[in-house]
Length: 273
Image: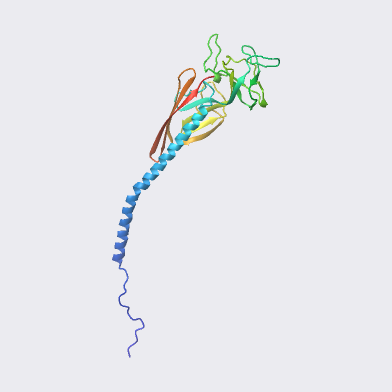
């Protein structure tokens, strides 16, 4: 007696052969490659554009930061080192006018030609902090026979001021007279020197170091912080246009991922002391 067929054959059903699977994989790979080729260019273009925009923003921000500080520079204190990769100046925090003549009893004018270590402020009272200096009529010139110097870096036009809050009279640490009287009787409050320097692929800002006669590159001591990275080259150029105005030129080139961005920026420097 024949055995019953418990697993009858099902007609019309079959699986993929190995050849068919390989063909599908190959066709899918070809389609994927073609799609990648077509979309690669737009994606790469977007990435390159975003990189250039980022570098442009970094360079523009750095140039604007330098310009903002330079506009606060003590008149005739901007100087560039011999390699043109560093610019230094004495940054001011505020300023005012000093009393030049005694109009009434008790007035304390600033005397020139004789020792004097105090003077009245004309206008609102002011605050002074430890380590700040008073600068008056800085011309940035060296001394000559019979002519006193007026260079802040030599200490000619700077005097350390005593700290105080809401004061109407300035007290100086030295009674050595200033070399020249300001025609407008103005003084500036100097915080200290600031340097912007490019080296090692970075643009850095230096502050809090001591004032030196010769420009130090880099400055010794103090603090520093990076302002821009990926710096391929930079150049600072300073020209005294006339006795009242100067021009600082900044050339900055940033490179990243094979892309480069160059920026040129000019800053007008007010040298009216």
